[in-house]
Length: 244
Image (cartoon, rainbow, N blue to C red):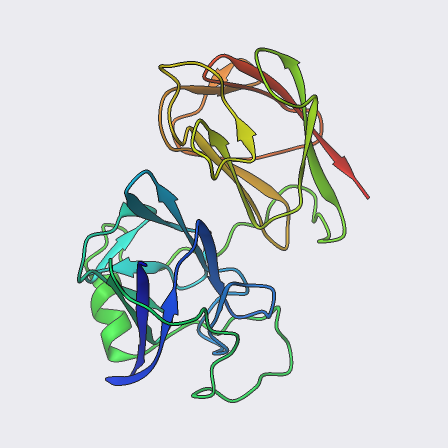
């Protein structure tokens, strides 16, 4: 089973096994919890795509790095080193162990919604390699959506196995893969076409393969979803709605 070796300051903390999908972050509802103020509440997610694993940054405050390069999305190879805050996660395609439920190396913090910006020498050096020379702050999101609101995708047109899908997970995939919440039908549909991620401010759609448009406008990267948006993803038309 694939997984990560979690390290802090060159000390191995534990092994974290990976299932079909896992989220990495500071709050207890993540699959891999790193209780450190440099880590965002929901920092990154890792999901299986066929025989490979893909890591996606969830617009974290301090960014997600793979082998000292800041990434939005990256297909992992054996030995890749993820830097999340001050912690390293070394990817091992045949690792064992259980998913962590906390991080004893870091002291508890009083406000789980606040992320401290890193100012260590290593992080400054990594950020200096970026074209803009500075870290991006987490997106404010549409309308200050509370976590109690749940997004729903309603099928308007196209082949699907349900009429609507509730987006209760931190990351919901659209594609042909077994891990997808919204399953695409057809031989030539992408295994993973798009990801819908949920954070403290709202929902965000990210194109992963194929084509996607929102409100008839092509989307090539990320898009902050708003109530009533119409998504066209690989032949499927979906309406995004919010429910309290």
